[in-house]
Length: 294
Image (cartoon, rainbow, N blue to C red):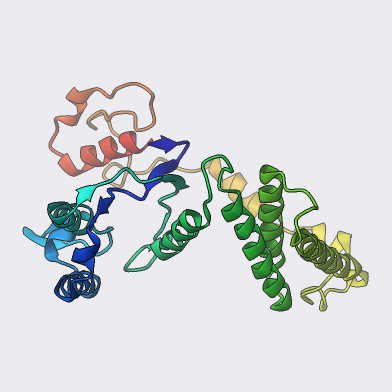
């Protein structure tokens, strides 16, 4: 399910209950660990998407892998020795953002970060009526801790502003009051971020040239008369010679009545295709391509 550019995903997916005696079997645990380690170290060729290049099928390393060996194969094995259960699930809205510019492999959002958030949310959940308040409260505290370290590291102003705004938005959505014991720490950190941004802006206002790019510019040396007075000594003879020009002799680029009519390259109507049936194939092909481009 998608909501305005975000994919609404359910966690966990298929859930299977395995008997405790089976889990206590060392041979079962060893085989399960070896399977997971092998899938993590060596990706099977069947999981790679395939692209056809130069009449040959090659793995497309720039695309994401198919999770069928976990969602289908491993789940099928566990269903054979266990039974499906209806587990309490959560929903996460995720974006599949891809950054790809002058690189071999594109950048995608970290799946490990999504795994950690799902593990935290399912572990800190108490019941279905609190709307995961513990998890969201922990995320506010955790992001505040990151913001504090960002202030100590003097990160750029735009990053600090976005981090403080995101924390404030989470507090507003969750509706947490000041009764929480960790809220003063959050308020102090956000106030410190705003104070740091205000001090940086004050320094910029006091120094009109913070980068020193105007050091060599001396406004007292400006001369508007000298800078705006233009001398074009060769323009008048050129304009006077236009009226006395002679027609170009035939055969040197002149237009003659024998030229084949061509289509309008910039037109909002379809071209006359009968004009394209001529000997100059390359010329009329270029005309058609320019018409399509426009």
